[in-house]
Image 1 (cartoon, each protein chain N blue to C red):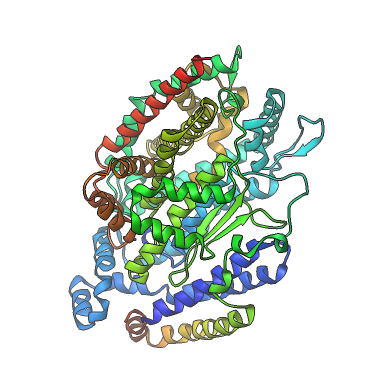
Image 2: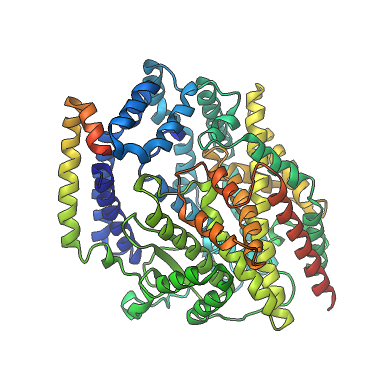
Length: 541
Length: 89
């Protein structure tokens, strides 16, 4: 084994062990300490090995080829080295590179200040809940309130949070402005035309992918407007506000799914993915991959994590709800992806670019959803499934494209010499938001602050990939369900591949060309069909 | 610059971002009736002991990693190209 691989495997094991143990019960400080210790040493290790890339970059093409030839073990680095070579025209002189590197920590200031405001200084506030008790808001509680509470409480939660953000509005506009200027500085310094080209070039993604996505969605906003109108009708409100947008439509289904039932549903529902997949999936579920239930002091949310040498680990907080079943399908998708990639790729290619990372997880959800919709017995359950499906496409696809459009607008504005003010950000966000959801939605005065609340914007041009992954996964899941010839082998190949190819090429090999609008258009068509079906079901009375 | 240089923790941070996106849709228990970890049957818990059986074993690997990381620095200063080759092959 290579020394670097061996060391980093040990480092990753130390790191993941500490954080998984800490997440079992945050009240036990022993594991937090392990985490801090390995964090510090890992930083030291990274600093000591940070010379590798500049060293490789500094080699001329010929020296590099000779270097590869003289050391056959290095053959698996060929893609990586060629990729460095590809970006060479944007690499500056050694002196300039040192200057840029030294400016790096300083360039993080906008993002650091935003995070300090968002995570430390800003409190979401307190409201009176439906039982008349005071409730301190957290984001977890907030999203639950938006789905389940009375309209008065939803409005109170919404207004309370917006007012908290309003207090910091000038600082938030300044940090976002600073971040965009930082993006532009590095793009220009490296000789890119604009921030978008700079950002996408890191993974060799054509800007067409980005523009196609936004254009295709803009040409198909009608179903989203229709959903807003349907929502207004079903909720029987004179004015539909943003805090009415997450309430499930139609009769409530309180169907529970025990964890054992969920496992069985997954094994049956994902059967179209083939015997090998199901066998490995089943084995994973019974081999200590999953931490299922919520317990005192346990970390919140859900994730899939692990190291190159370990099996995958899945954090769940399973509470028998329909959402939990899909969360398990989702995280198992990530876990299976890592499991296969770890056993097929060499160490340095065993990760995933975000551009492909959400495909395996979403594909599982889509296959499961199609299975459940086919077998659903009564109308309430079907409506619950459609609510889940429609909300998922809204949240993972439309909202992310809307954010992507906003990001593009503010970057273009600065690229064209414009200044980012509070008013500019509010108006830009309000216009895009209104355009997406249509004339039936009324955006309350302070709900146009959302553009200043999103931490992802401090990683430029990141969120559009949630939407492209969604579209790619939908297309793949349909072909799997249709039993298209050879699709299981193709999909397995996709699951086996990490970063040994460019992400657009990996998807192209799987038959999904994200430089073309087809996949995105299919998701738009699916959404339109689902809204029609929902309307039909709800109007049957 | 940041996007050109891949950190070894990159894949971990990607997964963390994925978790963040999902966080917003998670259940919250407010009633204080959450069970203790010891109340849960082992078959519903992940097996972190598959990475290290206990913290003593973790400490042993930690010592190795710490010592090597400290030495890498002086090797890098004195023999950069030799270190490059021995790290990668």
